[in-house]
Image (cartoon, rainbow, N blue to C red):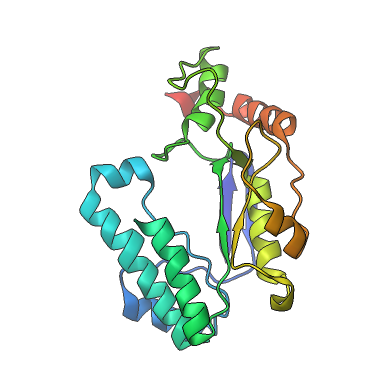
Length: 219
């Protein structure tokens, strides 16, 4: 049983939930084999700022951890680019059904900013509610693609469920209707991707949720 507490809401999923270490290959393999897992969604990485502060750990988690997952997946059926290239190699060499989503910056009201290079986009809303202002170090003409967490989750599920024969590419770029966007034409044509949270909806949702947090959250 998995229970998530998000703000004032408690969400319960009737499914097994197991903690593991991405560097513990033996334990990861046991989990996959014993639970007959057929989908592996790899999110175990250290974000940019945290990785810069601990390069050795980032190398272990982001690269060795990736190899652990790829090796397990193959047996049963610079790190971001490394992951994509290795995934394609495993696909062509071993027939691994590898699918990769390249996300833009992700915004979510459910968690505090935590070390990513685009976390300022979340901090903006917390500071706006707390102090009414935010000091941004970007130039006024700088544009970065962002994506709301609801779109991220839906896109991930959709690409996993898409029939393999409809996917021309293994790597898909995602972005919403922001001033500058990534080329997501492959995602649109291969599995019908279309965002449902644009900039206005994202801003309103973030402000509403952040404003509803208890004041102690900002202490």
